[in-house]
Image (cartoon, rainbow, N blue to C red; front, top):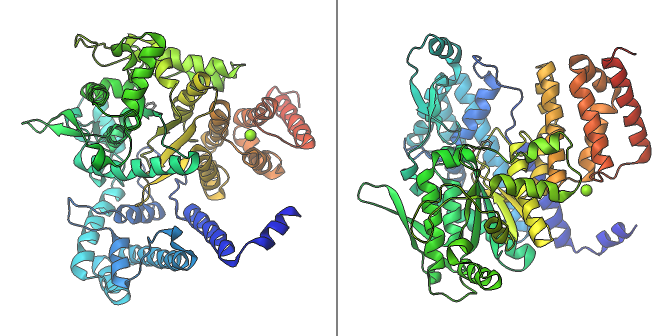
Amino acid sequence: MSEIREQQRLTKDERDRRVLELCEQVSEIERRLIPTGLHVFGRAADAGERADLLRMVASFDRPETGARALPQLIEEGLNVNASAPSHDGARLSEKSLQAREQVEATTREAIRRFLAGGSEAACAWLETTARVPVAESRRVFSLLEKIEEQLRDNRELDAFARALRGEYIEPGPGADIVQNPSILPTGRNTHAVNPYGVPSDLAFARAERLVKLLLERHRTEHGRYPSAMALVLWGLDNIKTQGEGVAQALWLLGVRPLRDGMNRVTDVEAIPLELLGRPRIDVVMTVSGIFRDLFGATMGLLDRAVQCVAALDEPPESNYVRRNIRARMEAEACPFAEAALRVFSNAAGNYGTNVNFMVMDSQWEADDTLADLFVTRKCFAYGRDSEGRALEGREARAALNGALARVEATYQNIDSFEIGITDVDHYFEYLGGVSKAVEKQTDSRPAIYLSDALSRDAKVRSVEETIRLETRTKTLNPKWYEGMLKHGFRGVAEIESHVANTFGWSATADAVDDWVYTEVAETFVLDEQMLERLRELNPHSARSLVARLLEAEGRGFWQAEADMIERLRDIFTGLEDRIEGVA
Ligand code: BEZ
Ligand code: MG
């Protein structure tokens, strides 16, 4: 009732704005590229997957081939503005939303015509329909021709057999097809990047925009810039993006990379505060074991960046790094070298936080246990001591806890089209784990953000928003789960694992809405036909899924109706009996 009254009070403009926001969210879900099944080793992408991938590849500029982003060419040809800011008033937004739909529909149709009739047909159609110059579209389609051919050709089994015979396997770059189509053909020996090339100029340029969005969002929601942020840096992510995560850390600190005579990134210089236009943000970096192994030089660079900023003679309100280091030195009589440690990873030779194992095995009672485990695993400092000696993973628990005590927001860059935060348990073990560790030090949960560099306009989302989006586009999306169920036993395990990873975000960050668990229960367990399918294909995963829902309720992560829990309990007992051969 009160909601209705509130709605009656909305002005027309406000109502239009809300409807447009809703439209935008629905179209975001619709546009998202979702994997519709697992990759089968040796099997090439089918026609539908090829069309989706080609459309995504065509959505970005490809300076290396001179091809421009197809949607941009169409936007220009149609003389519309599909990316106008949505806060400029409802009418403009409505226009830009319509323009975006028109641009997207035209892009889809152009790809369809390319696949059905070839490049020339698609170019001619685009010229008549959207006035895209043929010289421009030809560059796009000649790139797509090559990629389409490579997508049809799968050499994975052949390369695997050659590897088993001890023969030579050609190397190829490690990346995402959309970020770097030269990863094709697959079935090659993946190589990493030169750490001295990181961050690339492109990565540094892209990171500037993302950090602006991130800090603006925090300021809008919390009224100020975060005093410090905890960042998670992964190896594979920084290989794929040539160091976007690293570049984001440098931008937060307000420094730029410097290249030596051999074009290697070996140092940094401070960006003057007048140019930066905001304070320098303190950053605590918890990096994966893989990152530590692959990016030793980069770990040194990040440590140097912190030292460089800490040494700047700037007022505390403009340099949070210096301010936080000084405050800690005074409060705890702690030497500068200790107070300035910001780059942490596992002990040499160790990997992971183990927070995922503890959560999956339900082996914790108090929140502090997860926080302590994260810190125990990740409190090894890298960088240089006051005499310039390399630390190489010296245990520094107090230093990590001290640095985390000033953190107000945590963040991780998401780089991949295929893997999201509920697909694997590593996102919650790292980003969830560090957030829990911050919560323990500060007595309040930090703001938790992720980037989404998957679209042309990179976005920043809160962890709650990201989970809602992934739940709608994957876990609860029939297109996704039916794709999984085609794989039988393994498919059910994938669905169960999504539910378990979602639960991991409740355990570490209290980031999951009740409706997520309710709809998971309704879709997979309380629907008799679906439950029967899961039970037939993989009774063990079906049982684990129901057990996880009951655990979510039991731990207070899900406020569920009592009779729903009753039914879940009965179903659980039935599944157990069946597995044990009682029923
Ligand atoms: C990494 O790329 O560093 C990474 C990948 C998976 C899990 C953890 C770390
Ligand atoms: Mg809740």
